[in-house]
Image 1 (cartoon, protein in one colour):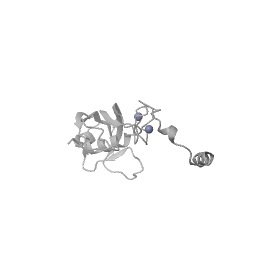
Image 2: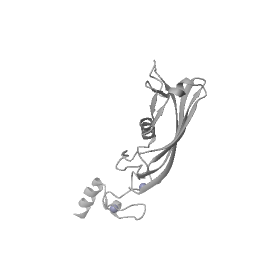
Image 3: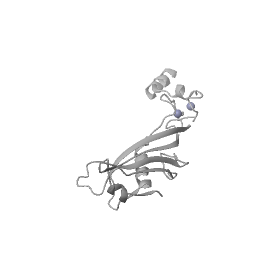
Image 4: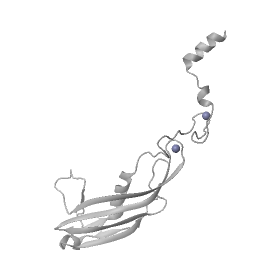
Length: 166
Ligand SMILES: [Zn+2]
Ligand SMILES: [Zn+2]
């Protein structure tokens, strides 16, 4: 658990604290998968620049997901960058960039977890034109083709072909 004490950072203009740590997000789910089976690496700093305390950091990891259409595993290296302004109190909570730290301790784990989860795409595809899996026979249509689609006849045509048979 990564907590950053902000007392000095708020008091001293020009003060800066670097951090480099790992975040465990193995419990996070994306669809049916846990994308972060290995720790997510966080690296960044908190700086007091002219009295404004800001946090800037990157989160990097390998995201393990599956294709939304064919379920093929996809491992993607991801790097996300985040910036926040830290404030002791806020009068107007319409600014999403502001993070309120009333007790002057930053819970980096909690903030980074929500930052990262918001960045995750709800769906991923192994490739833009993934053909997916045949709903009838379950074959991966990127690898093989099946005859299922040819057998699927328009019901109106089916009636017609029955009429023609008689
Ligand atoms: Zn796919
Ligand atoms: Zn098929």
